[in-house]
Image 1 (cartoon, rainbow, N blue to C red):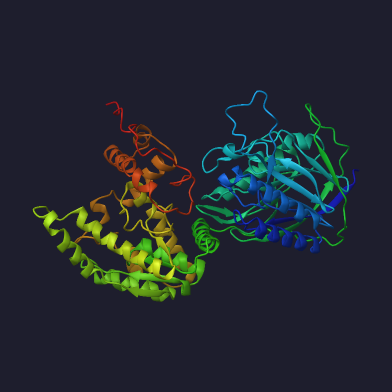
Image 2 (cartoon, rainbow, N blue to C red):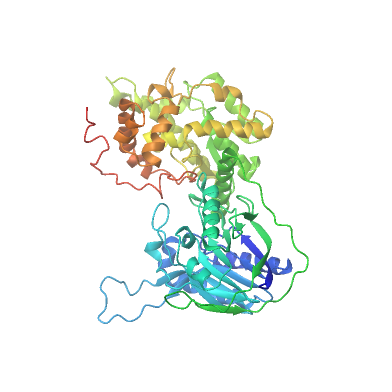
Length: 588
């Protein structure tokens, strides 16, 4: 019977900050020491954790790549008694072009998305990512050159393969070459962004790779918020039969420890092409006492989205150096959800809810707004806008003479409120959070320089029907009505004119959201939507509204991504655009 080799693996899902190479290096070093002290033989860290993910155009700077390499060498010098694997951007010197290639700027460095093998005080080896995603939120084809080699390392006779994120989403090379060469454990250093349902899909994919290759697979995912993107952690270890062995928490840093028994491999055979590079690492300890593997529970769909939004606000505010935040609290469901998220992310003492009633604001909504702030324990600031509205009306009266009141007068209210929030921001350094949802953003039911004015759009990627679900779930988990039931039951209204309701201008939200999910998130055309049973006239109107509002969305603040296709990094359409899903007309 083949010898079984016990190994203790540590997966360090950490929350790095893009560009903070010094801070990230200290965080990585801390986790390496923690893993070593916990008896781990190997500690795996996330993709590009040394510089943060995604570094975007920082990768085009030679000083950035050089700083990362210097930090990596300094980090490696302190690694003793354990094997550590950490992601970093690796500068690649281009060979001299003869004759020079006019399409390559010689001043722009080339780079690999790489995983460094740190052992015995040095960089013992490097694996370079082979599959570079260039879709959705990813632009790796812009920044990196693909690696061409698989890679193995040997610890006490156990052969272990190396991969980075997308490498295992694409079946085959490099993991197949590493397993064929003798690997019985494949490690994946990952920065896999969160979207609703992504964690389950990721685990299913890893399970499939493990079964296909007959090897243990372990993925260490980063955690935290980076601008619009959220990384959910949920690092996992999966057995060769596809069964889950261990899982880390969602949306929280964690050092996950897992004991494995791996069969000793024969000498590496290489694949049918070239030999797989092999690095040998000394083993430093043998753990007699086996750990019980931890399998963290997963969150419900509502709680998962909510916690992603909380993490996104916390990291956006913290990593960008803001202290407090402010938001307009209307007494409606959207601003209520944004306020709940902000209080959970930062603590209510750092949240300022600004109540700005107009002559069209009902007593009920204003009472609810004050109740929400009190229930959350947040500061409530009262700034009635009656007098500013009257001043604008007097100023514009000569120009508006002979016209009927309409959208211009309504939007003045939103813009007054936006100005007041930005004044508070300028005076006290508060970050303004906008409160519009995805349904409104999609169809342009928002005011430029009014309710769109701010630094972070908290629920920009949350459809209206989901807003209700998240508030109801948060109330239930609190065991009390943080948001009064009257807010949930009241028909949605912007309260910019007497007796106004959202459904005066928009389809019912349950129908609108079904169309938006099809058109925006799944790129379905008009014919497909109608064939799926959606009413043709409403589909046509929603398409028209969505297409017309592109210029507004381009000016909106960044928003936290929780769907598979959000406005911004995912969905990039030209503002000037004559193509329409409304042409040609459907056959009769």
